[in-house]
Amino acid sequence: MGIIRHSGSFKKTNDSARLIITTIMGMLFGYFIGISFPFVSLTKINLPSSFISSIDVASGNDHQRHSARSFPENLGSGNIPVTPKIYVPTNPHGAESLPPGIVVAESDFYLRRLWGDPSEDLKRKPKYLVTFTVGLEQKDNIDASVKKFSEDFQIMLFHYDGRTSEWDQYEWSRRAIHVSVRKQTKWWYAKRFLHPDVVAAYDYIFIWDEDLGVEHFNPEKYIQLVRKHGLEISQPGLEPNNGLTWQMTKRRGDREVHKETDEKPGWCSNPHLPPCAAFVEIMAPVFSREAWRCVWHMIQNDLVHGWGLDFALRRCVEVGNFDCQASLIIFSLSLSALKDCELFGSSAACS
Image (tube, helix red, strand yellow):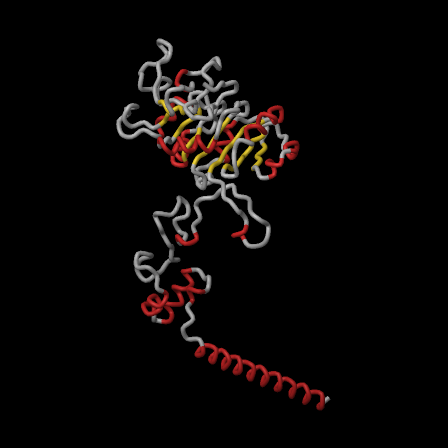
């Protein structure tokens, strides 16, 4: 029994010595690590600011450590620093804390590859956006309309009947953007899918109905006239014998553009206000990028058919006090003056 007691006592002594040696070695290792990296900043470690502050106070070097962390002077007060925040007033709302170099406020509808070099995505970037709100029953008319537009025009279809796969029969449909939500109107789509920051890549935005006739319409020449006359909101002139149409939006054969007209007696309270002047209908409006940024904010969230919106569009292009003769640049465009008779209308005849 004496031998057993002696063996147990010797084992306890060895365990104690091993613990002491391990502790000393750990302290030495920590010491050498500490002196090897004397300038490691605690701010690079994601620790609560209150914890960092308590370490600073305990070390007695609060001022020195505060300077090393390079916090902006306007952040925090006293000796307790706070998490630094970048504030750039010119950033978009909600992104003020982001460095300007990584802010991307605008987008587009350009299709992107799933792999490879992004610079090879597009051989040609469309300059203009053309949208139609469509049902499959109007596919032949839409096909004829889309074929009028070159590769400079990005086509976007809003499908109110939920039928999109049937459009695959058209080659151009593969390059178009398709959005499908059942039983909605074009202004519902426009409010939700044509945000100004999304369509900022396009100089002009066409928001057209599906049943328009474009036999004599030339998009390139239309854009030329819009640029020539500085039109912010415009539309092609309609066939003058097309039944129920405002006098303002009917084509005229004696000029390229017009901005006023004589309407039926009692229809205009002011000859310089819609519908006698400064009037573009909602069936086929064309907006500049700048004008659309304003008009988008005017579209109410519960707007359905858009009736009455065309009477208010002028507010997005007014300059100072309203005077249609002097400052308003919202015209109805007549294309009949062109040599090739590029006229917007379903049954127009060249004169």
